Length: 252
Image 1: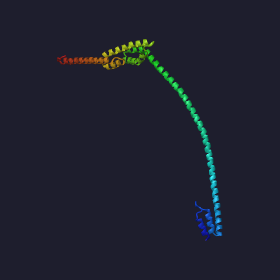
Image 2: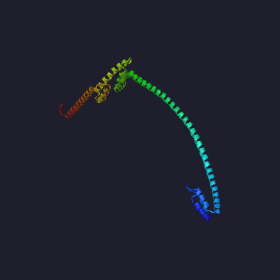
Image 3: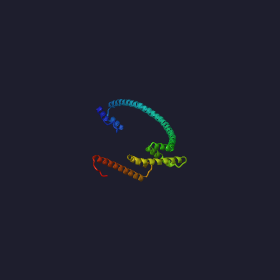
Image 4: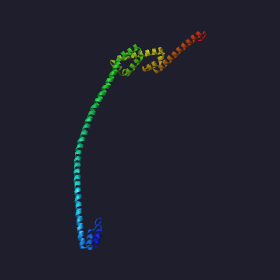
């Protein structure tokens, strides 16, 4: 009967979240004999010791974990603090590098500007030298009947002649080059009349020398007309010869 009452007391929910200790004790004292109470006391003492051991073990295990976690946090904090100083040093280095890079870029830009200026001056000097050499080269091309080369040389130097031809020593060069350019035009017109198969090329070269398009068209048409008449005249002579050879009378 005692064990039954103890079981009923145990069933009252000692492990429940709503367990009422006073009510449990009153119920236990009221419904349990002395020997049952002694047994219950011994049982509970054993459970308390077991639970106390478990608690100590849990505390020990968690204490070690707590210590380890504390050490880890302290190490992380040290590393973070170190990283902070390293980041500041890194940012300072980056700023210094950026400043030096900007200074280098500025100096390089100045040098690039100077080089570009020198290149422009050099290119202009080459053009001016080409102008000074133009009369000699034009004369050589005319003497060699290399009119294409003469036109190429004159048109290449024409912009510089137009810009500087009225200044100082360029006046004499410009005047001489002008006379020679007129000789080139005259030689091209002569070739246009004498070499009918080169009419198109001659017209193009004359146009590059600045000759009026209208006049060139008239010259081209006249050249074609003369060439056509020559072809027809030649054809008539061939026909006449064929008629004579055949003993026939051909009309003009």
